[in-house]
Length: 450
Image (cartoon, rainbow, N blue to C red; front, top):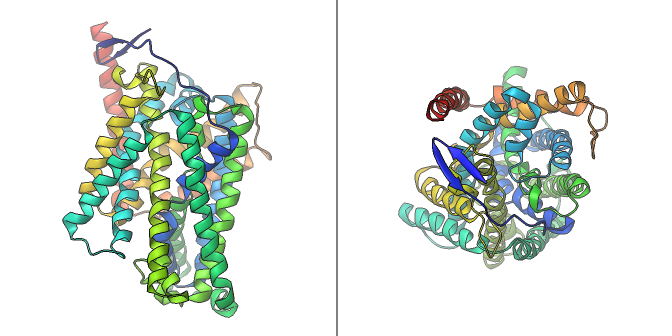
């Protein structure tokens, strides 16, 4: 098969990806993706924005969004279980404009995917500083070195990756359950459920704070769709992709709400809001400094687990685009032995390594969510609504109460986007505008060279 991109032509008759991931393995990959750095970094920020236990509203907004948007992903993933996720879905949903939408998603992913990985790597180095003192250069070296290690771990067949993912999920889930149950003997309900709206001069300021807090909560929930990016490697995808999505979301919602509630029932919210290592501080308060260090090591493993899953999923996007002729053909290569898109994996790792050296964590988190909202999440939800009305196709999974979940998803995404920092809104709009310009220039060049 011949593939073209920017006038380049390459033969990519390669081995195919294998459907080697079971429901258990796919769900483990989703759930370790969702946890990672997320709650351990965002809990202090969310509590600070909302001035106390009322922060549970932000977690509930994030949970509602995950379920509503998860229905969109479940429907698309079960219908088109291919590598690349949104790259495939946007093409299918938008007809003659599908190539443009998919191209915009690629442009977004080239920037956003390395940012996601960099955020985890930077969070890892920051949490490591609870155990050892690191200079700014040392933190960057740790972040970059972690990205290299993860690429090495992922350079193997999908069956081995699935087994590693299950082990990493056992560590992840076990650590969070330990955190929850360890705090119950010391839990103060009056402290955890002291819901007050203080420090907000008006309802407008309150909702702005809720928007910023919800953005951070959503960052912690992201990853429930990773199984869709691995669609070509899931066994029985029509059933297992929706199941994996909803099992993942339900499990993580329970763990997050339990974790946030117990922490606020043990530590004063002011201490939580000002903590750089909230989980480590929590365990140190319950036990001693040594146990706090042990817990920190487990949290570092959780962050590694999440990055393992994130890099795995995102490496399939450039592969899918290249396979379809919309990206550099070399990215469509599949390793002859491991049956993985190794060129895409290595390139994503290299860019993530660079980003981990350049950016700060607080900026990365906001950018990650904001730049994705319009093209990936809002467009997909709107596309599903139009698809239902315009094409009467058989669906292996159809969202209940259609179109209410998709509409709720759009409303919450727009609310979060509107309340993001202006500079990140401008970056998101700039990526869209630049992507449109680049797409038409590419199309003009490709037409001229044919």
